[in-house]
Image 1 (cartoon, helix red, strand yellow):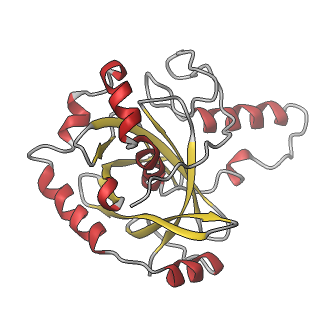
Image 2: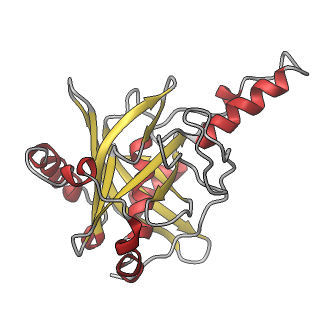
Image 3: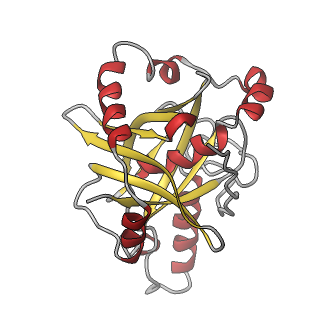
Length: 248
């Protein structure tokens, strides 16, 4: 299976976290200290400043449309599991922690392994994805099955992986499978009315070689029903994005 290099997204975000005061590196999407969404923070700040001059301007929440943030982590895994990069950086990354490792250890493995089996059983076709691109499906909750794709103007649609999202009385959990390249799993947390995210201690990726490291991400539901996903890996400061579609 070929290795895929997905282009880094240009994501505009604040550098200084308003929650904990950490000064993050330029372009960082999620605060390294507390997991605050720096992209949404800037959107809220700019909207508040604009209202000082134009009180009737549309509130920024109309532009930040919903989430299914669990799927944002797929792109993080896809780029971060490049074994050569991980081998060079894992010693100095210092990102492994008990909450991260625990997502792949007993007792949590029972529920996550079951979700992984569901994700691996999904087999969407290119034709099905093309139909979803033409007419994406919307959902009333984040629970469901998903396909993650990348569209190239030359090679067309490429299926990157699949994911399942399930909610019980304790949490909203998810697992994403990227074939033989690895897996991501974690907990999605609501951000506002319909957006979701996973901070650094909420989610982890495991490469095919068994390396486990922290990831974080957010997602924004588009008006057409698709989900634009942004994510980061603790192994670098790059931002990445893909598009997710709900499967029928």
